[in-house]
Every structure is written in structure tokens, then in C-alpha cells.
Image (cartoon, rainbow, N blue to C red; front, side):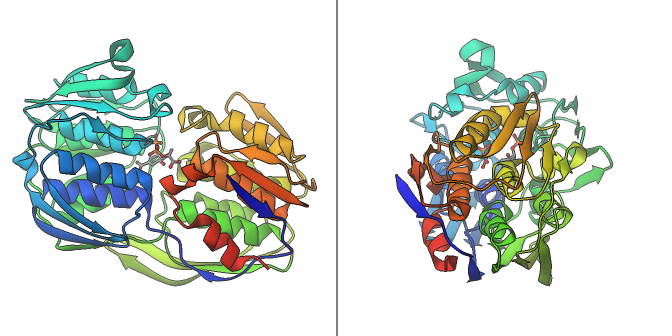
Length: 427
Ligand SMILES: O=C(O)C1=C[C@@H](OP(=O)(O)O)[C@@H](O)[C@H](O)C1
Ligand SMILES: C=C(OP(=O)(O)O)C(=O)O
């Protein structure tokens, strides 16, 4: 449990922990590469620690001290059959990408996770992997955990993914790396492309084109030696939204990844009228990075849908909070994927923000928020979903009185030190 007091404004310069998507991939690809890799700025959150724990059980030496990690890669086929079940905790990224990797390995493995993972759909990944030749069993014919796999010889496929999902794309591409022939993944809108970018830095040839990605089987990964992980824009979104909606605020988050497949939150903040500036733009391991400065300005509602959705999918809970403080109506649509995250994020966002007095309605594929509403402190629940816990806490900064966040420990999944960071900027 955590409590948050309403504040006048937020101000200051901060950093946020490393990018979760990039941290997972850095550990995975380093373990599968030839050579040792040092990872700096790693996210020591529960999800990425689950990824490390899986690779240790697969026989890889991983040393981790805070945000510094060293992985002794043994090459793609250097993994060994795990003696124990691989527990991926709360992490959808871990289980889906691991399934792609384990499908290529000539041994048996079993994957489980927590009760949230047990409700999340897995056929979106087990389906194409089975088409490639992987032997996968699981509850409800491979839709839910526990899942068990016996990998082996795979054949490349042309896969038209019905949803824009980097987890599906990455799982199929990773399997395709060791499949016979070529593997192509098409997706309706481009999802985050960290897999493609990082594989290139491990010497893999990846062909990205409009509408899809292609990879040839039989490629090896060679360690780049060192990987620097930028701050996570999905975590930066919380203090930046606080700055945008509290009069008199100004916050700079240094060293944040602004990959265009992730930067939808920047576009939305600008479209709603926030005063936002990027400083010190640079490249870090093929990933664009900047310092993001946001100051309060008068905000108006907007419409968010279509191709921007995959670029801000994890930020929608906090965008809903922002919309409660903007003048007019904000409509979020084409975001049915929210229903299959750690919680059904349409339902949990609506239920929790209503407790604070927000005027918000659920729709089939999003939500409608009537802004300009004063919020009141309330007893809210993360429902075990880190993004809901943080969104409610940020709403608490704008609310009168005190807000309680039940099950706040889930925030450690992606943002250890979240409350200390809010404290640092609260005035
Ligand atoms: O590949 C990744 O690192 C992620 C992809 C997204 O999920 P989907 O692939 O299910 O859209 C995102 O919501 C998740 O937080 C991280
Ligand atoms: C959906 C998320 O993560 P994952 O799918 O890896 O559990 C998230 O971090 O918001």
C-alpha cells in the first residue's frame, strides 16, 4: 500500500530506470551470442529479473548488480535443458520471446507465470510457432500457461499477424533466426522495433520494409561487447504527465529513449497543448535518445486512434489521467489490446479513475474521457498491474486530499523507486 498527497505542482530534473523492452532483449540476445556482454542502465525491475532467472536456469552465467549486468553468452545452441520450471512471473515479454527462442532448442522446457499471466492469450505466439514446426502443449490447447515446449528443426513462414504486437513479431523472428529458409512477419501497424535494431547490433541481417520484417535462418549472434540501455519512455510518461497537468510545473527527464515506434506519448502531449521540448538528441546503440522537458500549459482533449496506438499502448492509463485535466473530450479508440495486458486496462482505468471523480466511459476498444474534472483522493487499487498503480498515483498528485494505492508493490515490475521519484519532484 502507498499513499499520495495532492500537490500544487511538480518541478525538477530526474532520470528514470532503464527501458524494459530493451533490457529484456539485451539479456536474451547476449545469452544467445558468442562472447561476453556488459549491459549498463539495465532495468532491475521484477520483469527483467525474471528474464535473467530464466537464462540462469538455462545454464547461462549472468552477473547482476543493480543496473549493471554481465552475460556470458555461449552461442545460440549453448543453452542447456533446464532442470526446473521457468517462472516468468508477471512478464508477457519474457514468456512470448522465450517461446520463440525455446522453439529452436533441442530440449524440453516448461513455462509458467503468475495469475495475471495465466489469463493472457498465448495462441497468438504458440500458433505461428507451431506452424514453423515447434512442439508446444499447454492449457486450452496452448492458449494459456502452463506451457511446455520441445524445440527442434523449424521451417521459416510468412506470418500475417492480426495484431500489431512486438511480442508476436519478436517471437516469430527469433524462431526464424534458426529456421530453414526465410521468415517474414507482416503486421497491420509497425510495433516497437527494438528486436530488429538490437539484432543488427549483434551482427544479424534483418530486412525491415513497409508492412513487415524479414530474416534469413541460420544466422549467429556476435556480442557487441557493451550495451547501454536508455531510460524508459513508458516510465518517463508518469512524471511528464504530472508536469503537463499541474499549473506552474516544469520537469525534465534526462536520457530517455525516443524511438519513433515508442514516442506516441510525445505526440499526444503536444496535440493536447503541453509545452514539450527535446534536448540533446543522440543515438545510443542504434536507439534515439533525448532529454524530455515538459512544462504546464492549457490542455485540450484530443482523439487518439489508428497507427499511433501501438506507439503508446502502455501509456494509455496515464494518458487517461491527463485527459481528465484537459478541457473537452478525449476519445481513445482502436485499443482493444488493452484488454489483454496485466489487467483489462479499459476496465481497471475506468473503475479506478471513477473512484476519484473522473467522468470516463469504457467503449469496446478504448474509452471516452470528459475532461476538466477536479479529482478527489480515494482508496484505489492497482489490481496487481504496475501501470494502473502508477497512473492512479499520478492522478493522486492532481487530486485534493489523500489517495491510497493498494497493491502498490506491483509497480516494481517496471519502475523501482517510482514513489521516491515522485517525491523528488513534488512541491
Ligand atoms: O515487446 C515488448 O517489449 C512489449 C510489447 C508490447 O506488448 P505487445 O507485443 O503485446 O503489444 C508492450 O505492451 C509490452 O509492455 C512490451
Ligand atoms: C504490457 C506490459 O508488459 P508485458 O506484456 O511484458 O507484461 C507493460 O509493461 O505494460
